[in-house]
Image (cartoon, rainbow, N blue to C red; front, side, top):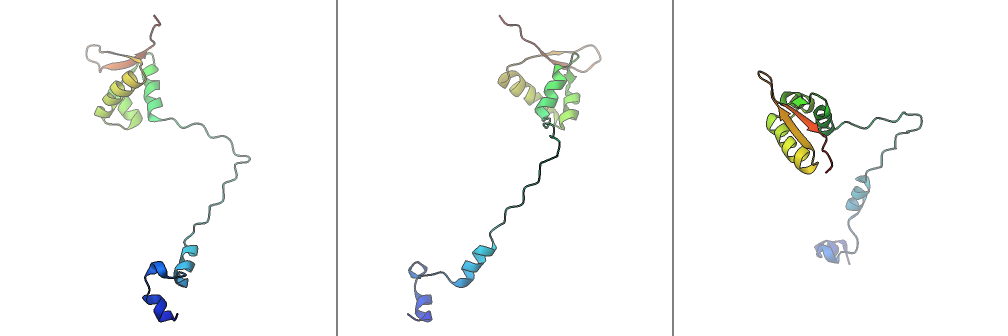
Length: 116
């Protein structure tokens, strides 16, 4: 077969791909980045998640207000309320109480449940 006959055949019947495509695929391979040496580096502390921050605020003696939780997490008010109802009460099953004194904002607090 001549070169003209090979190029006129459908791609499925060609014996080898053109050389330009083969060399391109080899160039596009990414080389793995060298791993950073961890010897001698101190252990990094575990990251504090937003959920952890809110739960620690709720575990305090006085509890926390919604603006306190909004500031700690950078969430909007409806997100904080959804977290309290969906995650704290339903998923985690924690006893969440709220109280409000005259002229103050409502404070939410996690109360330890008593075993029956």
